[in-house]
Image 1 (cartoon, rainbow, N blue to C red):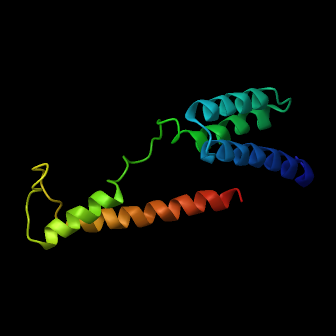
Image 2: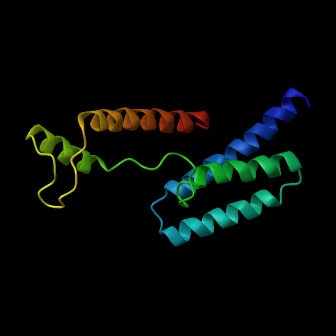
Image 3: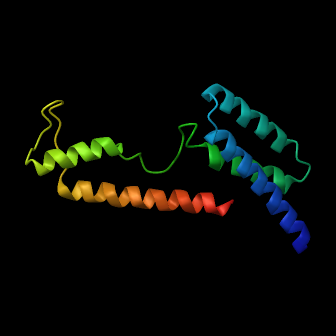
Length: 132
């Protein structure tokens, strides 16, 4: 495969990934975004080049799997407000929450959540940069 041809193939696949990301991140309803992804996958499946067809489908999947709730990454972190409340209660010397009676996170858990949140942000930025 010549460089021009491979650049064209990669460019076409990259466009599918960008469009999938745009659909997923749009402010439209979940229903409309799902329909947009279905239409996009239909277009990808009509590609005459089998390489573009296969990798375009994979790119669409990678951009949409988290939105569709089937991401194979680690489970999501607790929301930041929850983490902040846990930190406040820990600083007050509490071992359990006075509202839900749940156990307060340890200092190690709080540090781990912080590290994971930073790693998640770095990974998200790297993924976005890969197709910008």
